[in-house]
Image 1 (cartoon, rainbow, N blue to C red):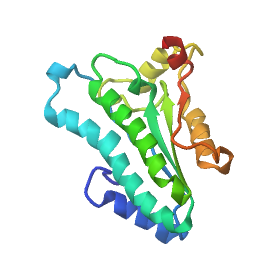
Image 2 (image 1 turned 60 degrees about the vertical axis):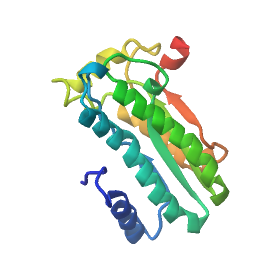
Image 3 (image 1 turned 180 degrees about the vertical axis):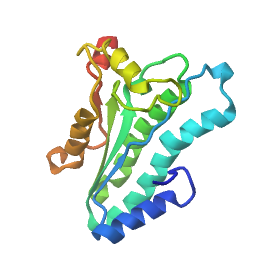
Image 4 (image 1 turned 90 degrees about the horizontal axis):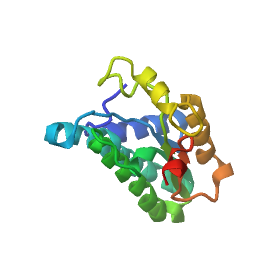
Length: 193
């Protein structure tokens, strides 16, 4: 386990993958944190910490992965964004801004690297029963499960359901998808749109 925001973390992770497997074919940027505070109450350090984990670390890992993938003229990058990048939610401005940045990084990088055979896409996830909120509340998975009941599908996703979408985007079955942000949010985006 490593702190993905530290200098050299992306380089080390990519080097380890290439050393272990002989090449790098897939990168999934799945790290994320939330700090639940109003903008007026959030410190600069808290804001920057969320950006560092959710956006900057993904940028650094994308950059290093692309370098390793280019000689093979193939590869797939899947960034885990959020439906929250499209909507305003009080008390999680840092999170929504970071996920919006990740969606835009996905689109822009996709255009820059497709000529090298590298596809970049993202998933706009809805509520998923994970521990992402454990640092800001006692039962993060429980909260997400309950909050997810407000989605048109009537529940939050299980991590395996999002993993299936990531596996698809990383596979040749998604060979024509470039710069897409695939919404896997239980219908939240279409209901709000």
